[in-house]
Image (cartoon, rainbow, N blue to C red; front, side):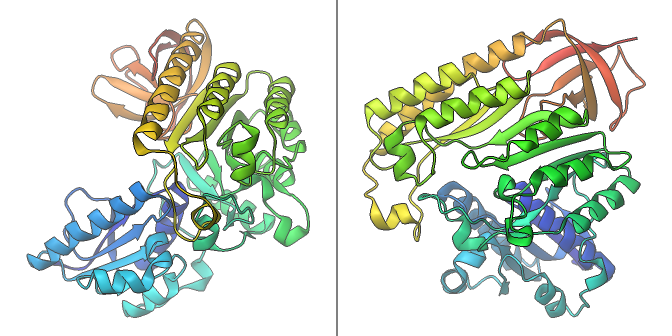
Length: 435
């Protein structure tokens, strides 16, 4: 029997989508709905899929999830199927034709209409409230929507539009509210973090914002995601040095290193400027861990370009690095002006080689931590271990610290402890809680 007034909400894609889902869940709950998030066995009468439309693989995942739920609807296990988010924002008309099983499509920001169509009332006074889907001790903090950069390969500005920053007062109030509910750690996110505030204040305001958040009593860790290297606000590093609760961690996508590729990608930075950029960050904040994302197979990438990228990765020794092969996205500058002329097998071979090199670097970085004492936050219990992270590790994407439950039975999620690192592999650290 279908569970009346029960909704299953499935979130696909990035942590920015997750924040959107959390705010929508709060609105639904205020209207009396029981909402389950990312259930492995959906039982509600309504399913809402918050889709991703960034790259090919993400779009395919979204379509597959919609089709899976459409089959449940055909079997009578689901009464209503709703699709929202980036994919439907971008392909609204096409999806209506291709997926008639879906009852309603909405864009990325149509939350009020969703609530209205479900016969509810949108509570504007609660627009910044949310029900956390993460462990209660950490949260993602989205400080802006959209992006003013126009990188040649990226469809995000097409989907989300220009940057729209939330005010410093609004963000600080959200942080204070979450701290009051037990949140200790904040992953600060935006499509382009370093440009925060230019639309509201006429200048980059990420450093003053982080400075304010760091002074909120109860904020133990702040971690910064998705910066941009060109026109970097260097005062942000001074804030990082001034506050112990601003993690020595910076997630900043660099994409490539060869001048020809950087120019074609419209990244507004050169090879030499990138090398200087990395050197300055490491000089200003000793011990900082850098996370980056690189792209292979962009139109026109030659063997020589790729060798430059390999040399750069070996030199930079990023503590955290991801990479992906270029996939053409309709409507982008690259799709309209360049031929996707690097064969798929070449893209994949380059990607594999790049990640093998990074795998060795990651192993060496992890091994260098053996013997150190590190502050760790406990996230969860799993089998015989408590699982935690250091200030250098963001949830879901970075390595973890494993502590045997038998050695420290009194640990619990959300607790900070000091751990002596005894062993390491390329992904995880293993340690004992210090007395």
